[in-house]
Length: 108
Image 1 (cartoon, rainbow, N blue to C red):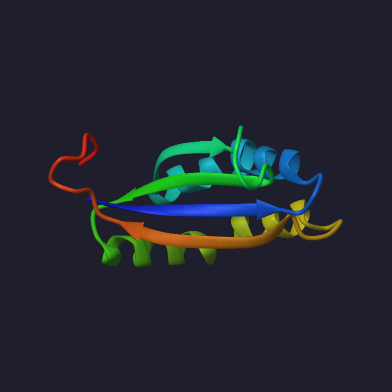
Image 2 (cartoon, rainbow, N blue to C red):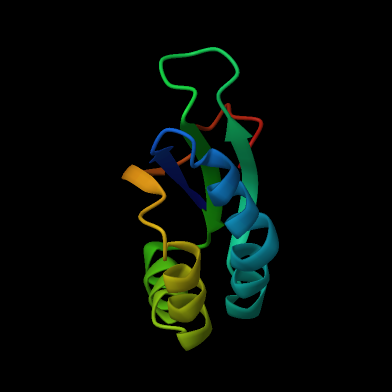
């Protein structure tokens, strides 16, 4: 199992829009494409309270490529993203890293 750590830094005042998009749209589309989330987090204390951090669980990088590309090219996602950003972008930046658990990790 590998985990993808993704951090979305929203533009000021746009966090509610991003959270609503994940809650109401994105997670349903991920279910449709077999994308598994391992947790979502907002920053309580830290360098940026405009960050949404989440983890995705993948069996392999090949699985990630196949499922993520299918999601990104889904016409329903393309339309929903355009609709939720019709008043401007939500995110200032997005970063991604792929993590593998250590042999002593409680998460495998």
